Image 1 (cartoon, rainbow, N blue to C red):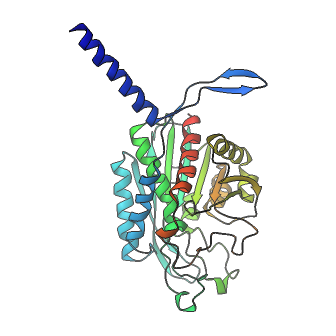
Image 2: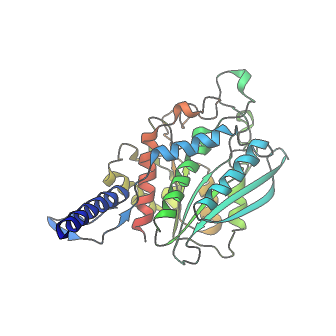
Image 3: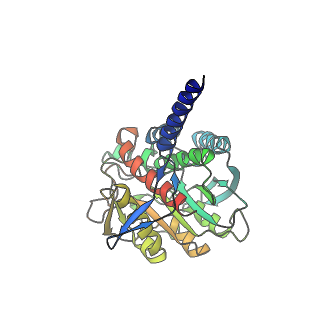
Length: 335
């Protein structure tokens, strides 16, 4: 009987060890100047790219998430329910926002918070709306059609939903706020570019002037935009380097250490007006933009940017894995 119990106990220990190994990455030692430096063990959940992919697929299945449409309302309801299902404290910030052409948009910023009482906080964000017109499509017949937005919008949200799922199982040990900004992509069509000021990122403009918690602050923020395409390359965007150089270094060094240096390249790129600009300028939270952008591309962004071909065919689980594992590692190591 003693041998039987002991054997069972050993099997139990082995199984628990394997489970633990599959659910975390332990950062224990580093080499510095030929000396081994022991660091604290950090249990980082393993990011599941299949799960993130399914979250993207679900969003795209609603149809283009253009404000004032049924698909937009239904997807917003699903995002709220999904965050609540993963134990987030959810706030819906609804507002009427005026677009560049005077259209009043029924916008909704969706905020999911973990450890809301913690003073030490990190902001993770992405936009969840999609472009109302495919103004970069090569077919003139498609220029006024809405964009499916698999990469441009849904990919960042999909990565953050997977992080929310993991945080509901593994407490990150600090406060994390996930914000899905609305009305980011309702800027003027290409043939009117430059005619209007502050036409983009309407949701983050509104939230940064009216945060869901009075006096809201965070140690730093990470914005995800267009983070799912095949052959993605994340360069170090200029506003990010200006406002949050330390966070840029932290994220890119983490990616390199984890083996994703092919995605996060040490190359500078130009300024991109995205949601992070208003978070930096209005709330002074050092926030970076992880975005698939290269100055030497024809469009700068991925090939199917603002076309009707921004669909699931172009989403890469390998890219999602690299981005998701990097971001969640940065979060958990910051605790």
